[in-house]
Image (cartoon, rainbow, N blue to C red; front, side, top):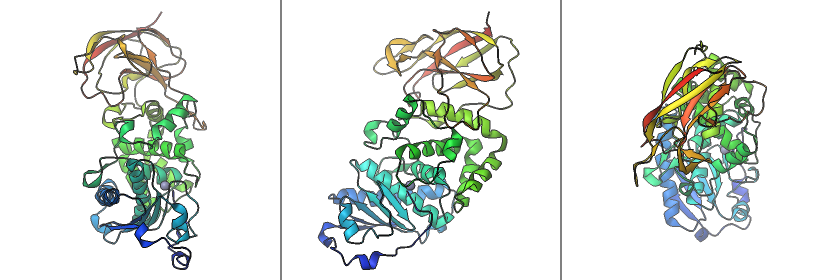
Length: 423
Ligand SMILES: [Zn+2]
């Protein structure tokens, strides 16, 4: 969370007059990029927060393609807080800071409430630190989706201390207790309330620390920063951080030009699949506005189990009727023994209620309603259950093999899929 109008550090001095915290209640730890004041009990955790922050900053510099000199005088004054009342009373949170549920950044000062897991506390400290860095080098952090999404992107991490790696999706719920981003996104998905890409870009400033807003903003920033064709436009957008209104989005849209419909289609796929362990290297989907319309001739494609959605390379016209058949064998895991699957899948191992190794397909419409606030949920079907398909609108036809998110590395083999005109 941040405030776009920066007011620097007023209020601290006079507020010290009220019931100060006793110095021995507080730990003070100084690092290269952070000066930490905290009432958390563990010296070890405080030291690890400082080491994590100091190791994250050079990775942020690299991510934003900045020269290291830009941060010569960057240092954050951070409070990590268990007892907020005491920090308020002692003026360590000045009265100019609005009430915040998780964290807050104002210039080079950040305040973070200690959470029920070290992971989540560290995440929030990094999140607020990314805001501070944006003020320092870009004079602002852009509109809501960009400021919160990029802060989430660069706060999500593996490891801690000097080993921390930022911009990494946690592998499992156990790796990121109480962080809860995927839980919140899953709830929205279950209710059919996943926002469209445009709706995310239109998020208004929100000081309530709404986890859903943060999560979808993060997802948008992941899509933009993970696909090589959007990456440089995303990085360049940060330079416009001072701009918090619609001009920021207009500029980005302009620089991405004709790629918007493809982006919206990829957004729909990513929202369906994002979860612990999601691997953007393996989940990038090849789609192009220049994909030819299917001419009705038989198509054959190899569907690999070590990749996410795979397009058959053409757009299927409205009114087409397809017959899909598949054969072949894949291996999904080697340990404790090799799991070999054929297109119907392994019926004693399930993922999302469907057999592992099952060949699945979906029709992804070429067109997107730019006015829609929410996206239509992706309808994923199995080739086994649905060998004949009626196509209602111009769509890409995509295949994938059902497997747990983040478990594609050790998969091998392929299914040979034939698509013919149906009767
Ligand atoms: Zn924030």
